[in-house]
Length: 131
Image (cartoon, rainbow, N blue to C red):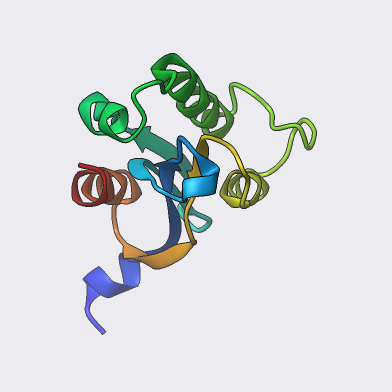
């Protein structure tokens, strides 16, 4: 096994979706949440394409979407605690953030992979999956 493979760490991620009308099940990808237990890493990144969101839902409250994404990032960074209680681990934070919910910003299914750079992987996933 090469040295590069031994440094690779497992990670899980979810794509964050903006679902303006839950009943229509239409969405636009707006961010990515990435967790790596072995790297002790949890982070979210987002990018809003306002034109795409407003084409889907002209009356969408973009400030509310930004606020929801900021709250997710704050929970990732430990600046805010989820409703489940204070002092929870990164893995528990990821589980709470990745849990299905019926709100305007929703997590997609959990996927996994291997990386030697969780932050770089997050940027790559954001660039690849959120356009």
